[in-house]
Amino acid sequence: MTAEPSATAAQPQPRPSIVVRTTRIPDLPGGLDALVDLLPDARPLAWVRRGDGIVGWGEALRLETWGPGRFADAEAAWHETLARAVVRDEVGLPGTGPVAFGSFAFDDSAPGDDAHDPVRAGGVLVVPRVVVGRRDGHAWLTTVDTAGSLSSSPTDALRRTPRAPVTAPGAVAWHDGALRADDWAAVVAEGVERIRSGALEKVVLARDVVAHTAEPVDPRWLLARLATSYEACWTFSVDGLVGATPELLVRSEKGLVTSRVLAGTIRRGGLSDDEALLRAAQLARSSKDLEEHEYAVRSVAQALAPFCSSMNVPDAPFVLHLPNVMHLASDVTAVLARGTSAPGSLSAGTGPGPTSLALAAALHPSAAVCGTPTSVARDLIREIEGMDRGRYAGPVGWLGADGDGEWGIALRSAELSATDPRSVRLFAGCGIVAASDPAAEVAESEAKLEPMRYALGGA
Image 1 (tube, rainbow, N blue to C red):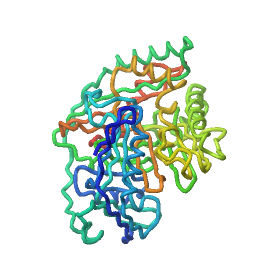
Image 2 (cartoon, rainbow, N blue to C red):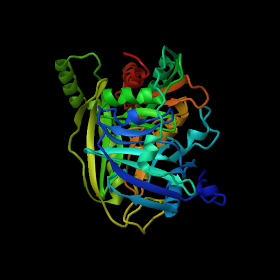
Image 3 (cartoon, rainbow, N blue to C red):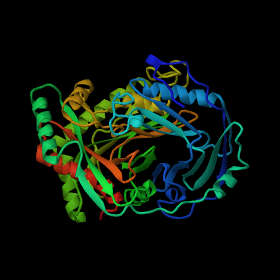
Image 4 (cartoon, rainbow, N blue to C red):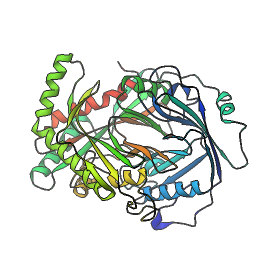
């Protein structure tokens, strides 16, 4: 099923009713990748962190959107789906009952604009046929059936699902993406020149590399390696987009909102603990990185303010330690004001507050992935970056029936080709300010590519 953009909407097609049943199951044994280990095939849906989260498989319903209205159209399609749903939820935790996994393009591209993958350029919500979740020692199973295809019971659905073996991708050959590294350094230099001329304050520029593997890439192989090695990140897989993002765009849960903002980065790989602490102290005092971080935090706070009755913005960032890099990080928290809604939201002015998807739309793109001012930075990205980002740096996550959910920014990610199972496109981006050095930004981008290089089988 496809949700047309509101500006050019055709008569909507009726979607089938769904029957949703959630039951408790025994807690899952195993390590941080216990949820990932359940995925039966190479089309997984996943959102996991530190062993908790949700995974899904099968496709009960698919809602595709594109263009400037892609978020509002997806939300409208989700509300329409829920209006026709029969739900029995015996657990009542975040992630139980009806859930949709989603991923959205960074820019307002339309079908056919993305030469790599025209269908995935806009956005998608996928409602799985089976969902398994875990939270704080509680586990559950959800089945989703369309009318007329009711399965016998949720636990029977889990038992009847055979798991295909997970295979390694084998040897990897690396190729330049849209630009070679030295050409991308010239793009960064152009960005710095525009900033110093006063055209803008910050721009985030990205690059890609392409991996060709000896064997077809099984995303479950990538997920397992990411979930265990990058446990502080949110490991995700939605419709061929796989990664482990350290940046939470927004979590909305029972009226409380959280956004983890990252901007300002320094490489960590290969350092001893003492060296890492010294490097962290340097990062925390870096005027260039603090400036970049301030822009990102300010943009998130300004975007959330219209929907919140109170907000806490930390006075100073902390240093987030990851295996490959360290980031300046701030956790912005807020309380939603009842009766507010995001522009274009289906429930504008009528509901208890905006959904997590509507909040993600209001926050996107933040200064952490676009720049400041947003419109000027986005125009500059289109002009000089030299590649189509697709869904890189767009919102990725999940949405529940009550509107709550979690949405990350699709960073430290890769896009699996829809046509070549041995081809994967990796992405990395860097925040550019007046003090940025092109060579240093190339090195930073290489550090940010490390998680996905490792996931494919690197050391």
